[in-house]
Image (tube, rainbow, N blue to C red; front, side, top):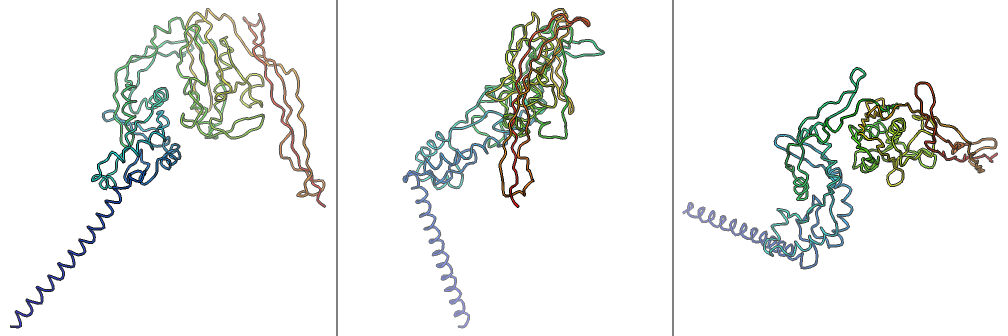
Length: 450
């Protein structure tokens, strides 16, 4: 009798537990259903479905305008986003900005809203968990992509080696190039446009050297070389000097061909590998991206003038620099100051610029018979441009005390001449450039406090 009683109690207890669990599950299921319906109805309010994203930017629950603003704010971080490219077992890493990738916040936001509405009602809650990417291809600047891919030469692929010119034992040697690899630009652009949230496989093809030894026929001498020193201890400046010089390795200019310093670099920007360093503006030292790259243009200018190349555009700094004599410097600035020259000879010239950690060296090779003289630069100071002084009284200093806010620096005007010599005899002299260095007014505070 007692046994039956306890069995009955256990069965009732188990029934109660089952009913409680069923009730709990029913409650949870009800919540899930309600939440699922709520999530599924989000697009009906004009907002983006939860789970919709673009290149890691979550857009769920946002209106089209809010999504656009969020995407605009995300553009800078997108440019710095790592991109991994693969080719077989080879791998290279760079950034979206270096590869010329970008997107339109307006187009992405609009498509995100449209995508939300296209998703079947019953699938919308699932998307909130599994995620859905907005199908808007990335824009690809192919010129920037080409330069970005070239920085991966040696890691992602082994590029062709162009014929090169160098000195060996005091003699000019022209060395044949070697066949190598190159990335298919169109395929890479298409693959990258589909997204960079995972490694992107690129196609690599065999390519011939861009410059053949045949193209360098006739080059037999050093037309001119110039060197300037820089301090490797100033790390940011050294980065900019070395990055700038890297764009001017093994350049061949055919007769009449033009070279623009800024066009060759493609922008003195962070995306192009430059960092913040010391620059000069209106005669005053300040900070700016690419500070130091002017030492490369100055070194090249001094070599180019001495090689008797045709200088089309050259600008001096607003203040003399310590790595070049007054009247012999050459400043560059995006959209403002460029250094441009052409090859005036009947044969090709070969330009090689290097930065080795201490020196920037630019050597220009050509056909010796076309330049039977030596050229040097002779700067002459024509006049001094006096700077003014601005004094201001201040109670923050005691009488007799003076504080220098800005040191007074006179400006100057130079004429620089090209001096042609054969042997030790000057055969002619002509104006190479004029330079005006901006005076900087002194600013001083004079104490008036007792």
